Length: 372
Image 1 (cartoon, rainbow, N blue to C red):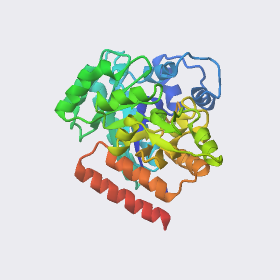
Image 2: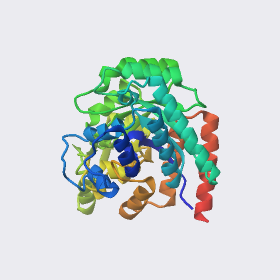
Image 3: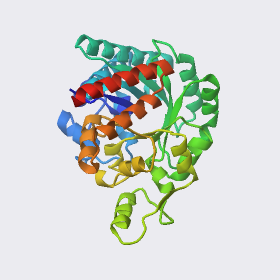
């Protein structure tokens, strides 16, 4: 029996099955670097170096290139649900950027409806096999694009349709050099219309990016958010995300003090329980060097609201179950810590109050059955 999981940060276009990507590429004329599923998957995660790309967005360019028709989008959304359910996910939000799926002339609304149809088909397949999962979608604007307001309007216009498929909004893309303040009109619209939103922040940029996210854009969740650790001081000196774990461990092993104090932004995030959408394995291949240097346990210890997410099942080649095992091995988490993370994710989900209470009861019951 799988430990029940709630997935809040999971990119649809980063989670294609390699076999599906190869098949769709062949039928749509998209050239891939490899036509062998195993080698292609290893190239996506960086284990196969050639051909080199300047930025990970180029890899997303390949996945989105095969997602330009209703049929392909429906299939990929359907398979996303099936893969998530196999990972033990009972509620999942798949995020994707509609503007990247209209290159073949597909209207934005039709693309959103295709994702809704695929998620619903996936739910039905899982149910027919005796399982249960609820799947929703988040529409992403892009930091580097001028269409963030248009996608926010699309989220407002489709919110509540197709059985509530569109759960909210996100803004993704390159963080450093593309500040949130350039997109405040989108967040003003969403806030006014009552559509919840999260923002990618605190991954490729530091504390100031998180400050903008919580104080200018007022995000309900922080996508990644791990660099909020840089607003924590060890004996008066700010921590760096890459060295925080080692520096704190060394200070605690020494004979001197090891005092940790939160800065104003960090304290704000802790006090208001603004959830961090932590993606441990994904972060460990860029934000930090290796899982052993990831500050997830330090963040939990300091009182941050931590949730555990896969980010990209293909591009990061990860599942939440695998991350659970890595966190257990590296940081000694057990059922209490994982239960706290999952119940925090339930509370952070873009659902109504009654839906959250029902989901919390389901998760608690499943955890109780898991531990028997």
